[in-house]
Image (cartoon, rainbow, N blue to C red; front, side, top):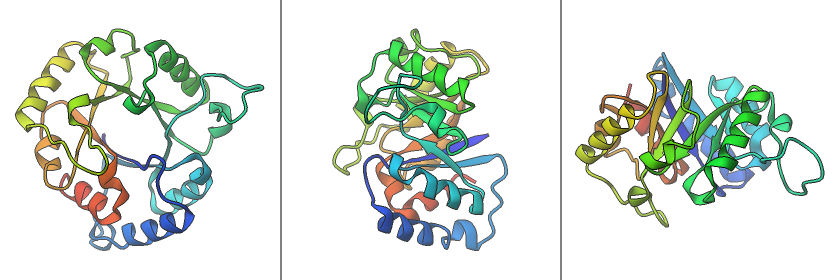
Amino acid sequence: MKYFIANWKMNMDLRDINTWIKTFTHSPLFTNMKVLNNIEVILCPSNAHILFIKHIADIFHLKTGIQDISQYDKGAHTGETGAFQIKGLAEYCILGHSERKETSDIVEIKRGLCLKYGIKPITCFRNIEDLSGLSQENSILAWEDPNNISQDGKYREKDSGEIEEGIKEIIKNTPPTAEILYGGSVNRDNVKKINNINGIKGILIGNASLDPNHFADIIISCI
């Protein structure tokens, strides 16, 4: 399975998303009838738009993800979103994203709640040292190199050879059942080289996923 995850972060209102969906579903990815065998295209909007995206995703055979969940199961936690509330709406959840600066203990609590309610966790980590505090068996693990994350819409690309060496080290420190994703300044120009690196099972895409044509080009480059 190859994963292409669009993390929209706190961007786009409902009007923007409507435009995004119309453009994306009329891109060559769909108009050329590309068969998405063994590929999961996962859209991760803000919580306010989860229900709408779930409806759209079901129509176009896409998947829905949530950008985060609460560390609490349920109760008096104003402003939090519990995993139990997302069950049936999102198939995936991004955990421990570098922007949230969470400890591995918190990430593990959230991972347990995702599994409890049938949501597949995508656990982010910054370096090999971070892996020691994370569950790795049968996991989706997303490497976010802190030196390679786009900032303010500007890409900070890492040489694909360096990424390949990093992935080799990660594979040595994870079980065979772990699926390794890469995230960090991924765009249509560099994704093919990244995707071809042995051991990478998918891409976590931030800034470039806000442009529906750019996101579609990234997927087309890899299939």
